[in-house]
Image (cartoon, helix red, strand yellow):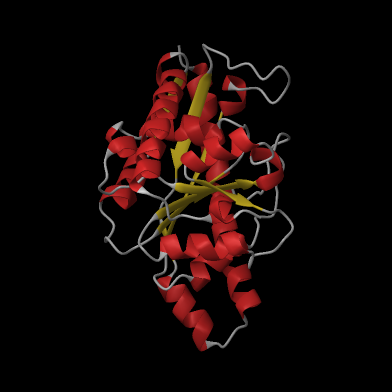
Length: 262
């Protein structure tokens, strides 16, 4: 493994290049999300509040479903102002994690994803692999991480148990992160999960933000009960999963309404 692939420490030149690449991807994503297609965003205020108003030292983890390969850029292209990609001040653009064997299989893929603040994760290597420790360091600075806790593109939209990695990040961060779940429908119509993987126009997508989850009190109680680290991260993940799948039902309702709108 090359050190650079999991590093989050880069030069000013690299960070500038990263900002430019992120800006260009953001512009393209915004074009597809808001102009070539119609994306409806529900309860955006929940997202804006934790992005702009949380304490400086408080980290944030956003979690959502993974129905299409375009989920990350199109979602954030639809909701983030352009200044997010270029401003050296907070809010910084999110960190994210992606499967090494999918997104980092070729050198130019690796370069593109790393410039987009994506770190490679080795699926099946557990919650203590080096990249998890590296992203913990960024969370402890008050940064924002976005992850897909299903662990893969869920093409069948089945109920999948969420991976425990998110529970480990919440439990082990020195400052307990806020977790904000959201759910979306329709992005797999914008970029279908079938060859030749051509982006579509004239489609409708819906993004629904839930309420932020604060784990400070829950973690204190679990530790007072002297539960093991495995038990703690399972209970945290279970709580996120409960809210996540409740949100799925609301998102489906909003999306059906959106589809019926003229």
